[in-house]
Length: 417
Ligand SMILES: Cc1cc2nc3c(=O)[nH]c(=O)nc-3n(C[C@H](O)[C@H](O)[C@H](O)COP(=O)(O)OP(=O)(O)OC[C@H]3O[C@@H](n4cnc5c(N)ncnc54)[C@H](O)[C@@H]3O)c2cc1C
Image (tube, rainbow, N blue to C red; front, side, top):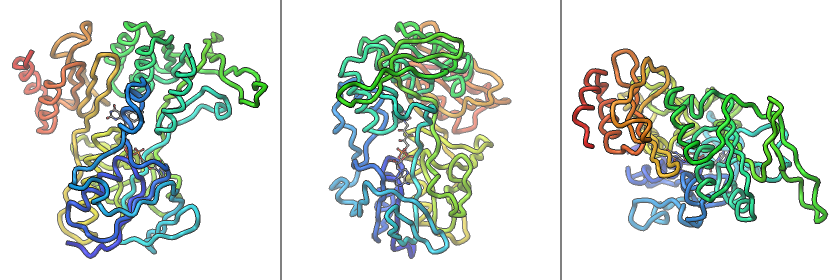
């Protein structure tokens, strides 16, 4: 075991909590402080665009639990919730909080996640939302419960697509506006992105691609002093769409602003080495962390639930291993995520970007039940499944083994139906 006696985790969410849990399960018995700017105890975000938004779950169900006997309390964490970290002095090994307090540490885990990008000029218009936090979700849900009927989703990424699906399931009129030629084109490529667009059209969503938003029209402030609410979304081509509620899902920015000037390398995230180490005594994990993946020969920053868990755990072990020389296990997973839209479960394992070929090897896109594989050179690098969870896991294992494209295609003949 190591000489670390004081560890501070910044970010009280999935990556931070899993790191804290792993520190304890590895035997770390020193002081453990978790600093988080939200006031809530750690909660899970995926239900925010699904069950909680639909109204089928109450927010309490999203609370994150831990596997240790005795639950969260057994971890012996000094929780500093509602507390913003505003700076870091790595030489002095001190974290600076917004009120000026300095928290000394021997080891630090950075797990500050990401913040949604906003559209300029929308801050003071009621009914225009982003969706990242529980409070965001409850604000959108309150507008839906108050009778919003016409929903416009700006950006057809995963969050926007899920919000669209959930709002349709509530019987609302939904329009998706996407600047690129297909929904989810960056995540899945053009061909599979087109399938995602068709899935929404099947369910009566007005999907408009290649469309830029020019601005928003809002009504007058009401007599009771309420703010101006959105009434219309104006498009660059001159069209306008009536809207009671707008959800903007145009991507996120990693939360690294508080680390400016710290000397840590920041470039679309906290830059780590291949083992998740960012500086002496500092590791990073989850949506905020960027690292070189040897497996995929690229710098990766992954905004998925599963990665926040496995990277949080890896970073905790890396921190305990210390700064001395020796072999340190690289963090080199096959990323995996799921998305629930209507009655479809969409899963992607590995990487879809930079593919030389995308081939449907099982089922068909017309049935909305299929597996498609992504090839780079002579290797399988990614697999996308719609309502085919078991085969997806088979291909994930093949990607883990760096299987050839030929081996992956051969596997498709023995898939379960
Ligand atoms: C609505 C929604 C639905 C999703 N659905 C899916 C899904 O279906 N499948 C999937 O794979 N993934 C999904 N995700 C992604 C997944 O939830 C994230 O990848 C995961 O939450 C990342 O965890 P994290 O701990 O790295 O970051 P976060 O969960 O973002 O947590 C970071 C925490 O740090 C806090 N923080 C930031 N800056 C500071 C600071 N300076 N001081 C103190 N605290 C700070 C933040 O407020 C936040 O509480 C979804 C995300 C959202 C928002």
